[in-house]
Length: 453
Ligand SMILES: NC(=O)c1ccc[n+]([C@@H]2O[C@H](COP(=O)([O-])OP(=O)(O)OC[C@H]3O[C@@H](n4cnc5c(N)ncnc54)[C@H](O)[C@@H]3O)[C@@H](O)[C@H]2O)c1
Image (spheres, rainbow, N blue to C red):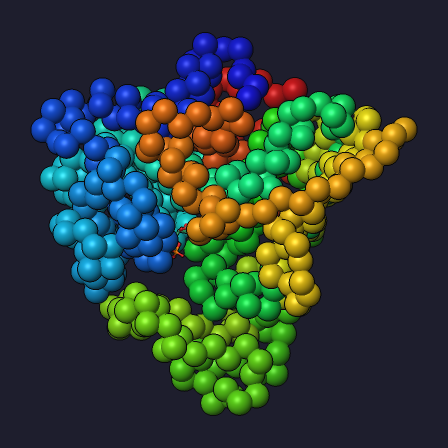
């Protein structure tokens, strides 16, 4: 990882290397909690929806319960937060959103895990740090430029830390790409390509949920693509400098002849190919249907809702500070799911094709081909591991919580990584709206004297 030369910058980012840093910081920040607790890292959760109660709830307690304990749950929906103990199997106190401060003061966590709707991540991370607690935040770290600035300033002001849970760095093929690039086999990287294909199941699901409204998700350029922009920043070990983008709502939303408010209230279920019966999923009924009268949120919203303003079709070009040019696209209504990623170097090209859901048989999770300019070509296949997101979530939890987990690929991600990924999405959104090219350095005044090449 490139560390900028000024001392504050160096200290800040070296301090972001995962569990050890978090545990040491937490112990230093909350000595009274450490002295009385089991020695486990104490975590409080804000956002007790799907991710908060599963990956960072029941599953985490099953796989990493010897290292962490959940000490409190907070959510804006009183019915959903009341279910958190049963859904996670952890008998911890529950709090409403306006009781967040009280949760932190009463439960004395070492860190708050933030798994709310995207637009609220930054506010909770800042408040947690102001209350003397580190923040472990789901992606995207932020959905607006100002949030990025406020986050960086809060980290400096409070001396607390942000860790961003970029699990997409942890998949086997994603690690393999990093290894190839670190090996130097391609020489200097000159340009890169990333195509994301979301299919008519996974892709459509974004438009049923709050993600389809930009004010909640910052668009998929923040919500979804922050994974991909972070991966590119990490793979290339480079900072984005300038962004240009196009985007449209070209398939979902207003692009249809009939619509309803949500699937259970729809008179067109026999005609709509996107009709989805949430009542067949017991967990979703518990998490959403049984809680919807408290906040009016329908998890099975209509994909043809006229109010959908999140782009379903996007192309983005990024110029990196080191000169690399990235061409990125995201389409959300594909007949199959996966990615095509490529790097063009001085000495050759790496082609990666990832298969997440295809209507044809595939051998592994990803096919790799490395071709030398004046040499041969070699191919190999990388398999996914067992578990959520091809084993990536478990590896991320290891890095955060399991003592002694090494990090040779520098997968631990702090505020810098979170902000850089979000800012590409914010810049792309702005470029789509204004037609202008957007310089990352113009989006916020970086408080740490970062150097822009
Ligand atoms: N890294 C990954 O692979 C991955 C996968 C899924 C989700 N996520 C992230 O996790 C987060 C949660 O996603 P989800 O699928 O669980 O969504 P969800 O809708 O199931 O849960 C969001 C929860 O936040 C609560 N909430 C909304 N506004 C709030 C507020 N102001 N204060 C407190 N609580 C509030 C909602 O009531 C809900 O319980 C998102 O940011 C998403 O990007 C990451």
